[in-house]
Image 1 (cartoon, helix red, strand yellow):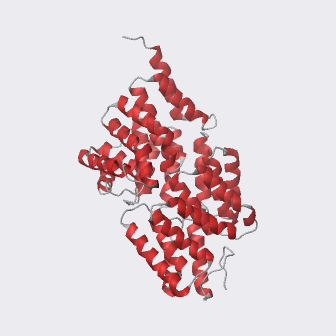
Image 2 (cartoon, one colour; image 1 turned 45 degrees about the horizontal axis):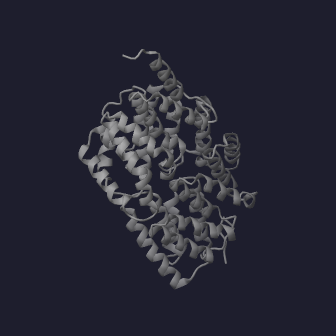
Image 3 (tube, rainbow, N blue to C red; image 1 turned 90 degrees about the vertical axis):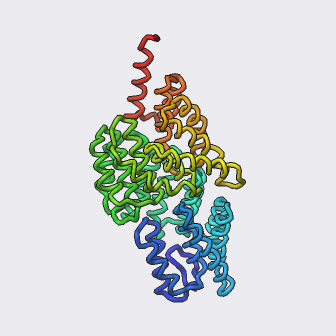
Length: 448
């Protein structure tokens, strides 16, 4: 039996198809545009390759779009039929099981299947990356770190070793080991110069530790790590914009928004999240963004019934609230109420923290800052579970803090600011510095 680049047996009997499969793995690890092209070639040449169909289904679910659920279900049906026709390795059967678990509403079951693969094949970088990606969607930073650390030793000298260090860097950053994350990410870039994930992990470090100069230089000096990417390159531009924002260069941030981050008017939820969270940050800093909210709200209005990810829904709400789409906001809130009453891993996230967060964002958009603060603060302890990174969720943190300031709740707001600073290794960025100054100024104003 032939083996792939992950040193695992694969049910493909044509070396050229194995080469395409390896190309898919490399492209997936690097967030490259060629991932679907290579996978399509494999499935065209080997229509009974169950793991290929499972990959198609899992990748579709990762997109967080309701219409792709049907694509994933079809892939799952085809994968099960392929196993019945041609069999498959234990690894391939577990991939099909992973897809089935997620389709049945248990993404944690998909993770468990991937971890069973890794117990047998710790050199399987592809399965490690998929486990990493699903945990990221579930906000499981601790699990991400444990998973990748279990396979680090097995990847010494591995063809894909650099990408594993990149994944490790991200998990270290998300669990607060900023020095370790920086070292791991830079090591990964030396081994895999196209490792966009590792590069972005180090950019996270510089954002969290208020070193914008380092982050901007890192991104500008390592274009080869991310300019080949699919829409992930917009996210790297987003990181660069955050770093400029921390330097107070809001004009550069707006230029990056127009020329890079929203140069292509895509409706991928990750692209919408980049855009909405950046516009909100700018508005919180007093920068007018004009009519930029409108095209985002147009997309968001068509997504109120998606119900795939709370993370995506809350970013849709940012656009709807800012653009004054009252009807769509009501539709989204009504769907949250229905979803929150259901059973399952994702509905549980709608119930808590989703409902409180959505209510808080609605109140913020309407200028009811006391209600916004109360609800956003109530949601805050559970926000990790909606997925995304600390940097991505920080827009909600900033809104919570500003709602507290605007409603005069200075003691509670100061406590949130101090906690935010502590989780950033004591680093005080421009946002924290200005808000602490605002609180100090407000306390010096005599009560009327």
